[in-house]
Image (cartoon, rainbow, N blue to C red; front, side):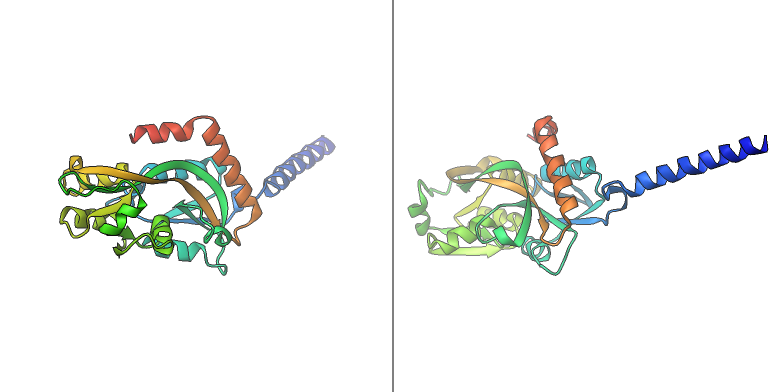
Length: 254
């Protein structure tokens, strides 16, 4: 009887050790460091509702991280600051989303992939009389841009603009458009109309004049983030794209 009890205890201990070894040999997820994920306020893609962070992109990114099992925290900061934080080679375990992929940015981040596409246009007020049918036309007008935005970088570097003002976010730009301090802004029509409605302006006054690009929203990581995190997030993103989860999130915001 004593020998049987000893054998039972030994078997139980071995079973427990097997479980513990299996847990510690899991690919890091249960014990991974938290990833701090940065973006900026950009309704309806990123919304700060009295401290509750939501929006199309934010819900998608949350789903990607939850599905991967990687612990994370989302923070909104000014857009140029978000890029600087995650693009700093001295840091690890940070991420950024709503990021366009350009040649200038290519080597600064580890690109997990595109989760959504948006159309970007020159937007004006219907009553303004402004007409933009191509890039040559924008030289005639004062254009409102956002600091750190991909289109700001492209338009200013390529010399298309003669007169422009740069502000920290689209909310300020839309206020300036309605006050006629700028004659056109460059952003998503969906975003502009959503913001206008939220700040008490008439979204029906906004019209798209000329579509300048279709941008992919990317999730990207700091370059020193471990390979394990990169591959798990990439697999999670692909799964949610393929099974329709991301499409459902987007459709809920249309």
